[in-house]
Length: 534
Image (cartoon, rainbow, N blue to C red):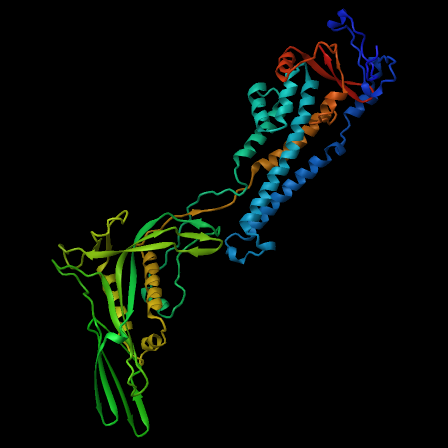
C-alpha cells in the first residue's frame, strides 16, 4: 500500500495491531512512486555496519569550533589576570576605553556560552544512543530531547532517569551548574593582611610639611577592594587668617623698625628691619607656638590639643602693610571613616567624620595611658567611644611639632613654612600623614578588607571531556550524529504501529501514549536508523 505522499507503508488491517514476527523496515528516503519495497535483514551487511561505526568528524564541526573558542576565551582570561596580577589597573589601556573588568567579564561570558553548544549537542546525540543501547520507553526520548534545550529539561532528566544514562546526566549537571556561576567575573572575598612598618613619626610630619603624598598603608593585589566602616583616633587641623584682627605695636629708631604683633589667640610675633651702610636686614618670616599641656598629673584633665602656632609673612621693608598672619592648631579627634575603597588601582580614603575628644581625669599615675572620650554631644558616634595614647608618644609628638612651628627663615623649617602658600592645605597634609603613621605603629590594628578576584571555571574542561566521551559513545553504538535535529523524526518511520495507533491530539496525550510504547533504535541498510516496536 502506498501513502498519499508516495512513500511505502505496510498494509493496514486489524491483525497489524500486534507486532509481526518479522517487521519490515521501510525507508521513506528510498521509496519509489507507490511501489512497495521489501527489505531483507540479510542486506544489512558488514559494509553498512562499518559505515555506522565510522567516526565522521564533519558532523561535529561546529561543536569543535565552539569548544575550541571556549577554551581560547578561558586561556585569554588566565593570561590577562596573570599579567596584571599585583599591578595597578591605571596602567591598563584597551580599545574604546574598555576596562579590565569588562573585558574579563566579556571573555568569561563568551566562554560559558560557547561551551553550551557542544554540551547541548552531546545530550541530543545521547538520546539516540539511549534508544540503541536496549529496550527503552519512548517517553525517555522526549526527556532527553528536552534536556538538550535548557536547564529545566536537564533538571527533569536527572530526577526522572536516575542516572540510567550517565553521560547525559553529567551533561545535564553541567548545564545546570553553569547557571549557578552567576556573573562570569566572580567576586570572591579574601582577607589580605597589611605589612607593618616601624613608626617614623618625624618622617610623617616632614612628609606632610613638604606637601608630599601621604604614604597610605594599603595593600590590594587585585586592584579592587573595599573596607567596612571603622573608627580610629586621628589628628586633625584647623587654620584661619587673622591678618586684619591682630594688634600691632611698632617702634622706629635710626633707620630701624621693630614691630610686635599680638594675634586674637595671644600669640606674640616680632619683626625687625634695619638699613645701615647699604646693608639691609629684615625679618621675612617668623612663627611661634603656645606650648600645650604635655603631661597629665594626678587629678588633672588633659587637653586633646597637640600644637597651636601662629605664622607671619612680613611685608616689604618698611612697608605700612600688615603682615600675613595665620593661626593654626592640631589636635586628637575620634574619626569615623566610611566607604573606603580601592577601585581600578586608585585608593579612595572614603568619607571621614571627626568627633571632638575630651580628656579623662587621670586617677592613677602620670605614666598611665593618655585617655580621651568622645564628647557627650556626639551621640551619633558608633562603636567604642574611648581612645588612649601612650604618654611618651603623645609628649614626643608635641615636642617635635612645637620645634617645627617655632622657627624663622634662618632655620630649615622656617624656609619651608615661608614658601607655604596655603597653610590650611599643608596642615591637612601633615595631619593625614601623622594619622597614617599611627596606623602603622605596633599598637595599630590591621583592618581586613574584601578583595575582588577572579575564578577560573573547572566546568569548561569537563564539558570538553564530555564532548569527546559522547563522540566515542556514538561510534561504539553506531549512531549517526542526529543530535538535536527536529527534522529527523519527520522523515523516519516508526515500525510496528499503524498511523492511527499513535495519533495524539495534544502534547499531554502524546506523553501518556509514549509511556506505553517501548522502542529500540535499529540500523537498516541504505544508512537509515528507525524506531522499531518491541
